[in-house]
Image (tube, rainbow, N blue to C red; front, side, top):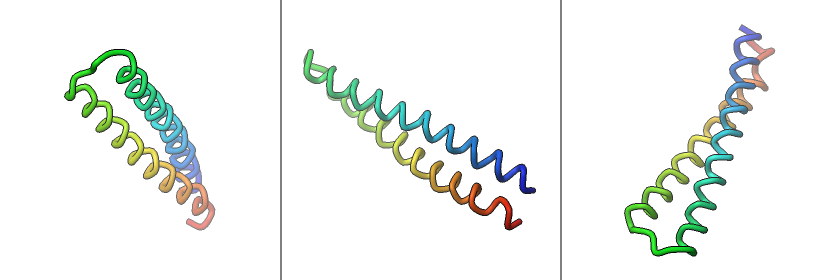
Length: 75
């Protein structure tokens, strides 16, 4: 049980880093696309929604990953 929680916690932190990278990418895409050309409202809303959902999932993955890492030796 200890190894599963440890590996799960590490994998969740890796996934959280990937999701934060995606948030960064969509945020810059939103900023630069809106500054260069006149984007459609649908594209802006899509980028905002993707950025928000990745951010929520990243925070959840960080929280659960930290809990798994902290409690891996207690089980």
